Length: 378
Image (cartoon, rainbow, N blue to C red; front, top):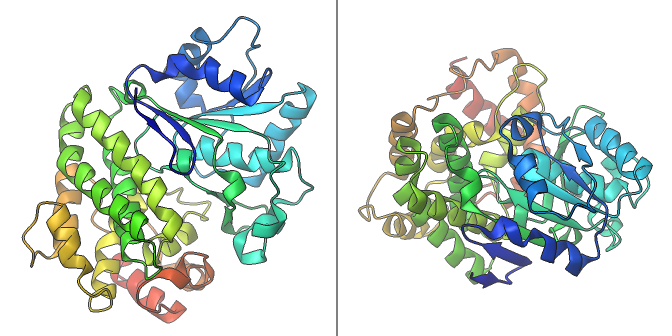
């Protein structure tokens, strides 16, 4: 199987789950806590994980992971980690279990509260290499968190913030496309658009990082060419493999930074009602942010269009809107039932988000308020 060592040690390909014991041994993990969600347990994926482990590995599972992971859930998982005297973590699932496991890795070895480790609170330097070792195993092709340095958490104070550090990159990642076969069409679509938003938005940030830009372009190409196929046929093995590769590349490239799409989706993801899916938010927000940033990215729209197999003068925002429609995703925040009453608070949160400074065009709370009003129809 191909071995990729960009950022971390990655096993990629069908059947790589069976190599998990080698990674546990390499990291010296003998008593792992598995972090998953109840959907992953119900799908039988936790059972499949334990089938490849030694009988010496006790079945220690924390599955109370919210859709948008919370500090409360992280503290509950840390309690289990300590009571069971665990020495490492396995995250199995989408971005929520992986992000939660990263937070658990911090709190298992660092003092509370979690808020002090948020990037906007100067927390990067507070996260030491003592973070509990983590093996990440994605079961969707979306966040790329299995190779990412960040964890986005809903904190006890009501903020949804990014916790960022090179020490949070999982020590090992196992990307086995077999775990995504048969994923429901809507989840395939939403997580795929999440991955595409990473590739596109990171490519557009002004930070200078040529390798990340190249990875972002390649990831965008793979996702655009294969996402609809995977939605139409959940067992298309080639499409599933290419989507997982594209999502992984999205996680690699957002080392370069993100922008307005994520500033808004992080803010909206902090709402307790309605509970909003991160990938779906990114899909809906990508077209208006592309229009907002037009004229501030040099020739990058043309380069993106070429990478995705479009005409050089293609309207990228319109293309994404059409793709969302074909995938059956919402057209607007109004369709997602976001109330107009939250607009001022969400606009301020977006301006303060750690991804806002790397948007290609400077965006203020007033700009975000305008974009929100247009999408909500207020």
